[in-house]
Image 1: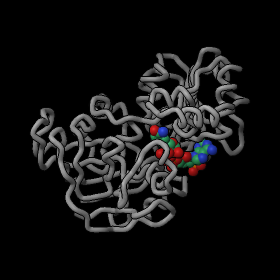
Image 2 (image 1 turned 180 degrees about the horizontal axis):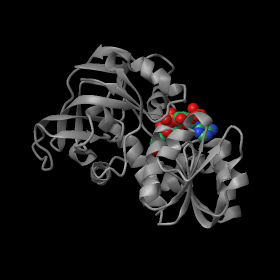
Image 3 (image 1 turned 45 degrees about the vertical axis):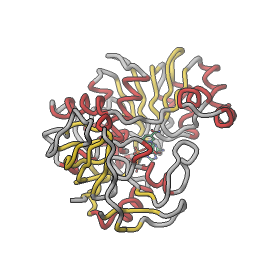
Image 4 (image 1 turned 180 degrees about the vertical axis):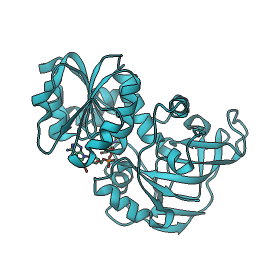
Length: 332
Ligand SMILES: NC(=O)c1ccc[n+]([C@@H]2O[C@H](COP(=O)([O-])OP(=O)(O)OC[C@H]3O[C@@H](n4cnc5c(N)ncnc54)[C@H](OP(=O)(O)O)[C@@H]3O)[C@@H](O)[C@H]2O)c1
């Protein structure tokens, strides 16, 4: 099968290669991939920046989410049959969606939302699950709760705004002028132009911040949270609590604890809980998300669709950091 691979970590372009068909486990389905989306984790993995959290073997097929059709099922698969249209985010040891086929555990996929094309469906799994786990599982966002979502016009932000509105929250978001109309159309109640304004001057007493930027934006976010609130980041530093939950060994726990020392101090100062989220695959949560999409409560936001052979161009476009919504690869 054709796949986009790297042979070593570093800023080397992916290349199209002929790879063996994936071997299937008894709880896995073989999916013919129709579309995949580009996520910043793809170039972070390529650069070796996620090595502390995920170990990959070379050559590595990149790509972390997809949509497609089941062509074979393993002996113990109970939830899917040949011909099912699916979408999913494979577990971290089994990534590789920039390819014609993938073997994926049945617990990591769900039926594709019926009202979406394959390209639209492929744009959802990673950002949808990330947003759901942040806003639902960790923040437990309530009706009337106030949340700030950073980088509202990005892949994660465009999904998270819609989900937070669906959960009944009041949503503030940071975006430039170029993304302002888009985030308003998704339901954002308040838009802070991050190029001309400081969000901490305008927002106070928030229940939660969902941060996708890390660095200074993350640290400043503690200032706008009410006592007992939560700051969740997918781009900040993992802390000791994360290391424990993730089952990292002693050395990594000490490393994470030292690296996140400033955030731990901010947690104490503001009486706010800081959580580093490393999203997990979940077919069950993708089913919930498919329901929201089929009811018309959440829609995909796609910036550009690239043909498979232009995957490297698509990756470079993602690295530019200006996408409004998602970047998708059409594979079939
Ligand atoms: N830990 C996890 O499990 C996990 C899961 C998902 C994502 N992530 C991480 O989350 C981050 C965001 O992912 P993504 O897919 O949303 O990225 P993305 O789609 O590439 O984000 C691009 C968007 O960010 C906006 N932006 C850039 N700088 C900004 C700023 N200072 N303030 C407000 N908006 C800004 C840009 O708007 P303008 O062009 O208008 O500036 C653009 O629309 C990535 O670092 C990714 O790796 C982590």
